[in-house]
Length: 229
Figure 1: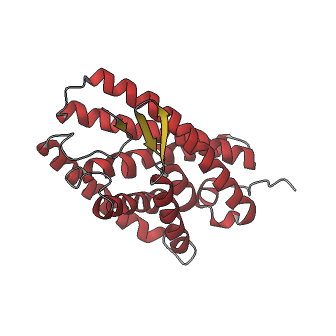
Figure 2: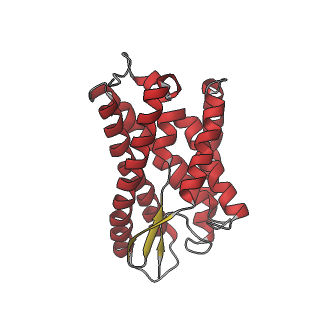
């Protein structure tokens, strides 16, 4: 059985548990829509579109990390750094909906599971870590890059562990929970490192050119970032 990272197909988790997580995802996205109204302005709206397009592109690329084990980038950390947690979660959720409806990537009955893991849990964990690290790391491009890298690894692993919890509640395959947890943790740590490198290079580039477009810099830094000449 190949392990395709994060996008849960129909039937992997039973119907009742899938229905519960559809409700959880809907409630979470409703909160995001409500809170995003405060953040969205003429500067953030275009950036949100670019972030969603970028996430869509990188999620279409599968990374082979082990024989029979592949995964894709999530993009949640990049989103929360550039456009904030509420808009960032909506960007990821929009991408997941389009992929499920148009490309059949992830089952429709599992859409609540996928949104909960990738758009809500992953981005929430990344945002909390970004908020902490940007207050304690050096105010340099190196500090920003390190923040993106570390938060990406943690965010991806947290999203993967969301699936493990869901599988424990309603998994339908013969695979043991221990095997699932070990595979998901190991695989997604590697994927998180790759995602972190991409996120770090992207946000550092944006910060050097237009630091005013980086949500996290506006939200968590009392001083401007130091950009080397």
